[in-house]
Image (cartoon, rainbow over all chains, first blue to last red):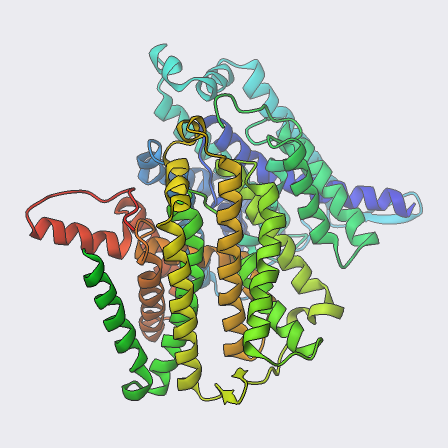
Length: 290
Length: 323
């Protein structure tokens, strides 16, 4: 029984990790942008959701939708306003710019919302627990898993079963060729960045009933998101899912059996995977790189 | 600049810095000590970024190993000598650099950056959670003042001058490294790894050597930090500390040897000044970094560009390292 709950807890955390990191992965996969500010987007999503829900749990879902919309708009503004000027330059400058955004966002949140921790209680209709065997398990955790699964399916359908998805995949493989075929890669880039940012915002909003959010949240989660995509495979659509489940379970069991070294265990696993398969579990070996 | 001019300028700068305790306030001495430690740390980092083209986000690991090595040697092993513990801290950091470097130099670009971050955070997790060794968040506190034999560096002025000597020694070592054939090979690898490999240069071995040297010097900086604060906390290993190295190097200009040292001064000066106006230092630093992305070269690059423009030769300073 304890084992089942451990797995369920792991999968709950994995659901959050998947929502968090799939946008990062999408943006890297299509646009080769290493977005260090992805955690900041999630943090902003959480704060926007908190503000829009007004602390009243009945409007939790309104807050979530607001987070999605605001973060999508912010994503477009970031891509069009700043990041697009760096595509021709070294990766270093992208990391640097987005790191600057992390610093800015941390203080901006303090300015607007203060330093204290924010959280929301479980929203209806998932306020109560459900019976799992002989134990009780929060029904909201199951809802989170369902939402993550729905997002995964939606992403798959869009990317592999629609024309837009085909063009996105084409652009990630060969920008110039896609452009030559008459598609607007810049517009596509902005759309992908908006989608990735909205997903980050969604992750931030949905974590509010589970975990308190503070201005330090951005840095905390961006490292987790990077671990997930690096383990799963940077740029691989399914990599984020596999990485999230892997890391989610690893942490759940790590906390139970090695409480002191649980974090070290996660980093060590990431290092081992990177050494054995530098491109991640489901990633593709880079061609033409040294 | 001719060699004599360089040596003269260096000596003059050192003399001026030496006089800070005589004329500056206690606060100025404190700030200068912190700037000297940060300068050494950031210059060691720039051996990787500016010369090797390797963006490490885990440099604080070695800063931390050095810092914790001193604290543990004093508190647990009962050593008291400044020179002995600092040398051992450098050795410990070099060893950590060898182990971590062995893994990370096999990867390139974003994978290298991510793996350095992962190793850095792993050491952070150990420092924060391994209570029986590090006391976790409580840190290791109450270290005595640094001393060499009968010489005590208990007064802030004396410790500052000791830090200055260590900084000068560290910069000298790094200067010799970057101007050696090894340093030239490192720059060649940064510019074009494939072509350099064809010339018969063992790329990984050079990168690993640079990583170990940078780690050792960062370890010395970490040791100085522990001696300065008489304590050490897990924050010294946190990735924010690694990011500070990046910010300082970029602020001063990672394209020149002394850029990060200048950056350390600018960084601490700005921080002090901004914090007087408002509490949002990280927002300010973030905006500065964003601007520097669009106007690269940092303070030293900007000054060099200005000097050249005044001299009538318009030139941009983006990439090249001038040693």
